Amino acid sequence: MSVDELKQLEQDQLDYFTEDGHRVYESQWKEQTGRIPNEIAQPDQEFVALDIGGANGRFSDRLLAEYPRARAVVLDNSEYLLKQNIPNDRKTLVLGSATEMPAHLGDQKFDFIFVNCLLHHLVSSSYHSSRNVIRGVLQDISGLLAETGRISIWENIFEGAFWDGFPARAIFEITSKRPLAKMARKLGANTAGVGVCFLSREQWKQELEAVGLTIRDSGWRPMQLPLYQRIPLTIGAIGATHIWCGHDPEL
Image (cartoon, rainbow, N blue to C red; front, side, top):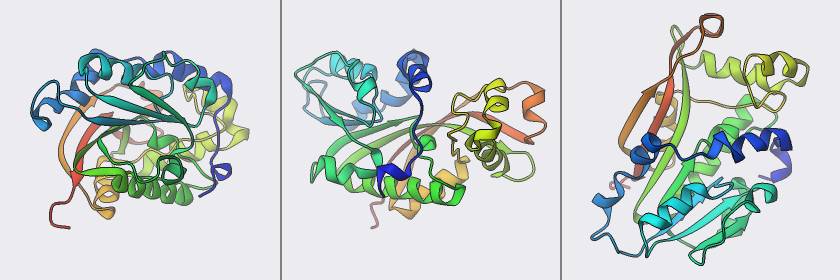
């Protein structure tokens, strides 16, 4: 799809991803990269990682520091965020949208692909079109992955107490409507007026399987919300999930 069809965050919203939004927390780092040693033969083995929506590059910087023969490609659609990267001969910056990766990355293949809290920001004009965008990006990610490669996805999750997908759908409707932006900001939504498209754990499993990817491991970190937010949205479970996946060996 055209990048023009995606809703874009304003600069003040991007500032969040400069600071807290792309801080490399120790527990999250271990969850996302702790499986790498099991996938490579030795610590100094060469591999190439793709950091989609890598913003200021802090995640890739740490990866390169821990693996001295690794190379990283940081792709982001914000020139403002990419300019905040620390230069590194083993790091390549690519200005482009996650929805147009084949055009920007060609036939490159990656051993590890990291998608940190990005997919829920791929918002289009409606909930259903946003879901289609997410699936299309997952399809492209699958095509960029080396045969034995692995994908690390970190996503926030809101699941319903009665209907699994209701809270995520409601959050999309509230955050995507500009007339509701002021209220959404007061409720803590930094994407107010633009929108955010969360999925449940079961929905992520379905989307990944649809593009030939298999979940090989996953983690769950529960989070808390005040009752005035949980009750109206009928939230049953809220947290962050880490999904470690790869190609379905049977396909």
